[in-house]
Image (cartoon, rainbow, N blue to C red; front, top):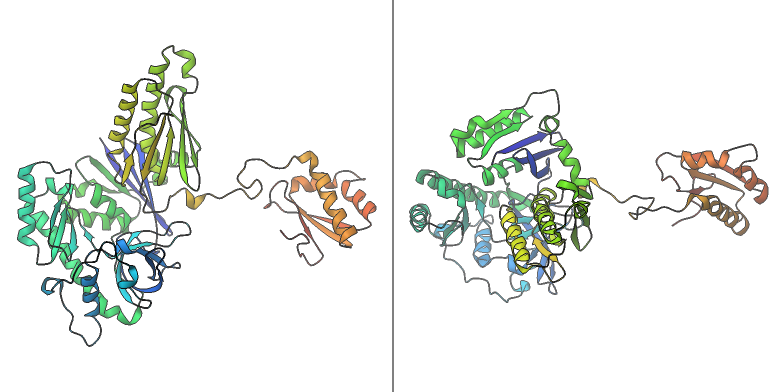
Length: 518
């Protein structure tokens, strides 16, 4: 598989597109200078304890207080708090490797036993702020590198489940045991299978140095809580860290500063791949040059076309995402309905797996596949979906087809959906796609004029309307406006505004006050 990473840098945001065989599979957008990214570590202050939720709200500097649940404190939270307390001015700071660890947090305890309002705690962003919710936090701190994830206050070595070889497991555990100080654990990632011993050792040492630097920042920021102690690397380098392998053929960047940053990072982790990073200097925008802009537009489409007339309908609701699979005109041309349904479902499954990554759909996803009657076909479709979803790095669960032909997928999302930030509900139809009939519009306006003049006693009314309605009301010598002025003995002016809906009407007085408040 041929993979490319295309990075578009603007003053306000960085857009990163990942393509597999020229097909867009992931789109990430990172706002510049917003902070509060997944992995960032903060020194925060507890604002409110919520005993009913067994959780707390913490001020980390975001416009909305961040949320931390009791189970996200981590088993070694008392030891972490002991470390934070030791950094108070006048106290001698302690180091993790020389600490005696405190008793672990009880699984069924209460958050009030460990947190109080005003308390300073060290936290890490586990989930970015999405919609009306603030960031989700954890105090189970970890630092991710290319080959390992460092876990302070632990002494265990965990390995990725994808590492199957007993010999490889033995090698990796030996490397980690030789480098790790006391009270430090590590999770060895899948990428370590292809790494040299010295690269893994260097990665562990790098994360230890980052941790010590973070701890050193606590004392400096005690007087200015909330404060950021450590910032995760930018999104482009995070994707490269987690995804870079032999299948990457090119990383194209249209900004020289970002190009140098990415190149320097790859030089550290995999020097032989430095040459795949290229600075794009074309006159055409980089996303247009790589045919990505057209694919991004499909993100906003409700309908997604498949081969030979089949298509998907993707609907978003507050509670879940619903995907309907339709065969289109295929059934007219083929006799074997079961085989046709199976072919369409398999093609749909491939596209759905791509769309989930591309749109970063989270929560519950319900898929209405075309009905299958044979049990072996239902099982084959489920197995194929599980296989296709295996490349998705987000945590997910795929459930078998129900007797109604529905498949349920739960998928974790830790960042806002790109589509949500650029879409809004139509103010005219309120998202229904339907407006009031225009043939009744003049009667509706006259009823309001009658109410305002006869019931409210207004002698002047200004109608603020779209140019389309304005032309309709002023048409001819004996126009509707003149007729209403004569009938209701009032002055009516018409003001045209292109920014309002086509059949939207506002009623103002001489001072431009709205006469009908909603």
